[in-house]
Length: 337
Image (cartoon, rainbow, N blue to C red; front, side, top):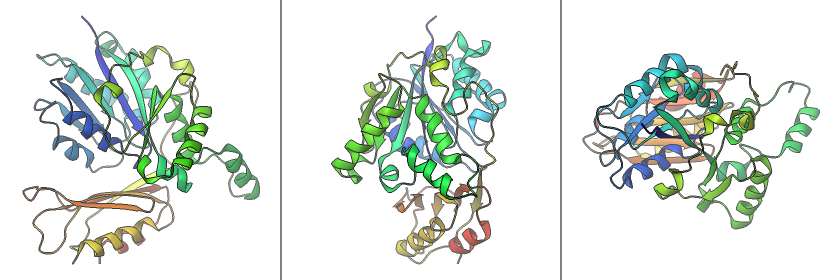
């Protein structure tokens, strides 16, 4: 029996993984695709966004959201049982897509495909790493190792690696394809420079494609990489050692008060993002006199707000992710007025 191809969709916080996944599902073209969405923290959000556009590709129960922590740390408890459930479906799947948390290290997940419950039934078709071109152009994530070294040398308080760079390095090390997202928001000159620096950090033969949120399924599925058989070439920052944790990051869930306008909510979220250590805000909020919930996606200086379906029942909750020790009280003060 042939093994089910699995695409691992990884990339740092806010890179655009869910947008790309939604696009893939709307272009399924008759394929039956199951989806596993992993969140960092206790509150799910991306799984709901995926389900909204999964009707053409996914049967009931084929979109599974894991919110017990980064999937790389919960392989035995979450990933293996989930894969066993999906691979045991009566109607065979054409593909599985796993959207990892933005803080997940891909290597432990790939190694899990050697587990007896999985290895004869599934294979890693390819690791797609989504890279935020805007974040790189603004310096929120860097590929410049010399600049990082200079910063550490100039500041005695920096005595360890930047946790953001560690995660980013591991995600690039595992890539079979790099998708440069938000490429329409960056100049052609800056994009060319980013691509040159990315190529220097990637394994030979790993391609880079630009995206504004949509790519043909044939680009993302059908790489036949067998990534789990090639772990030595994908070691990244943490090498062969699976021992790691996410103590450098934290998350809180905030129920924002109802805003009088979209602009007021945008201002609140911008204030929260501007606080030291805050990396990401996402979820749902409410605007006075509007029946539909406001869908919030925010990272860096970018705050995207759109109204969801009027009949949506999502609770007003915002997930805030940041570096360990960020001021949760100040975040709540910004979001709850």
